[in-house]
Image (cartoon, rainbow over all chains, first blue to last red; front, top):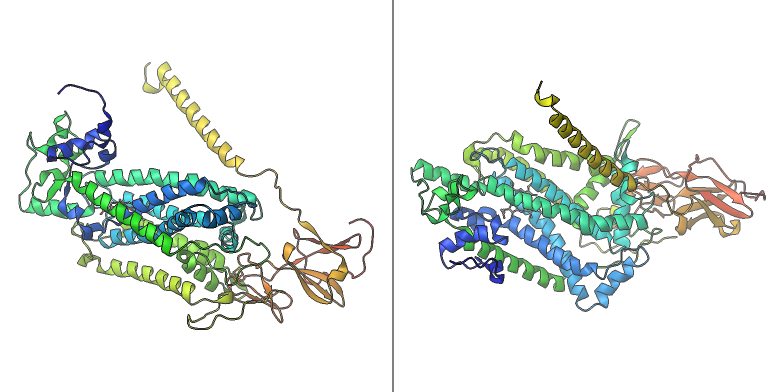
Length: 440
Length: 156
Ligand code: HEM
Ligand code: FES
């Protein structure tokens, strides 16, 4: 082997290894593949173990970044021109409507898939503190929670950019909810808006958050999320495979010459040489190309679904923002309607004191919900045997509580989406929409 | 005397660490402070509404400034159209007002009667500037503050 230095074909080296050894080498030879372990358990690769929902979230984020980068070249973040530039994208730019539709549908799907990913992590007990030495999966649960909030905030900020009626009133209501925080509420609102009214400073703030700050945070945190999975000894389901193998005394100590210890040959070893996965031959398989293939397949599928839905469900554009006239009903995007329902029904009177629904439903309850989710791994008392197992019997009660919370949110969302008409009044979907409201 | 904390090297090291931390914290403070505007290029809170004959007896919605001007036998009053719940613009109904966002209802005097709005709609003071009505959206007055229907003339 002469040492030719670097060759262009090294860029794709290892993507399609001819031997397991080549696959193992790829982990240290290819920048893209260095994120992967040398071996993974077959269990962790299974479609039913994780649904690959985290991976699909990442693919959706990728689709959003790519389509978003193109839209950035055409969109103008000014209150005078934002609406016209979005209209241009929709009706004048070649493929503009499709790009915008794809971007929007990927954003909606990302909210759904990230939530489903959280649900799967919860129901498989994959966030639990119990794990192999060095593992601490609650950390990834917390990083995940921040990613969930970032996903919501990305959607919210993106929603505002067209500067149409929907945008204007969403920002009005959303920032007013922030203002309901006691003592510092008004300061928070003005920091978000860059002023006291919804205008140009607000648009540019949301634009920069949407296009730079929040995606940058997501990229950083996702990288950390992935690295933590390696530190945690692989997906939670791996723990069970390793424990079973140990119980049956099938663990093979790493012997020199085995493909997966190749990287470990250097003094001190590397992570992959000594993870439990490397010790069980029969239940594991070379990660490359197994993960690469599945990641590629899910990406192509994600892109295809977004592209198709992007054509079938074009993104709506309402009338230009009009501070004088609130649309009736003025609805937030569907994933915020449970909050809109809460802020609408939670104002009540106790004697002479009015409890403000905006604070209760818009700040306190969602805040407590996030805190509860964050504290959950510390409160969870189920045994190590429940890590990485769907619906483990020891988790029956907490699974029910969790699903009840999820169900309540879903019910509120359905009410907000389908059962609320003008003036937020109850309306059955089959009722004729009332006559358009008259504004004097 | 070479306790770890007392050597020259240790002293320099600690000083450097403190300097770097102070520098970084200073940057972060500057970033955050720069986001709090010192000047707001927003329209002034005092808005000229126009001549009184634009406001016949009854109520008139001035969409541009989000207020209702109420003209009765006592004179003029200005009621905010900004819902006290989350800031949507309320619409007029037969008697009183209705918010499209979460359905708050206010009576003819702007008092919240139904829905999530926690407070009555505020009243803003009106004044004359020459022969034109001017509303000050930056301050509130109680519901009984009425502007005499005749312009006094003079400055405003
Ligand atoms: C932008 C959003 C997110 C992305 C891109 C993402 C990505 C991923 C990926 C690719 C995995 C590998 C397993 C899989 O594909 O399912 C994973 C695992 C994991 N995620 Fe996320 N995730 C996100 C949000 C979340 C959220 C909201 C939570 C929960 C609060 C979470 C908690 C976890 C945990 C604990 C694991 C380890 C699961 C295990 O060991 O089985 N993540 N994530
Ligand atoms: S903003 Fe008027 S009821 Fe919510």
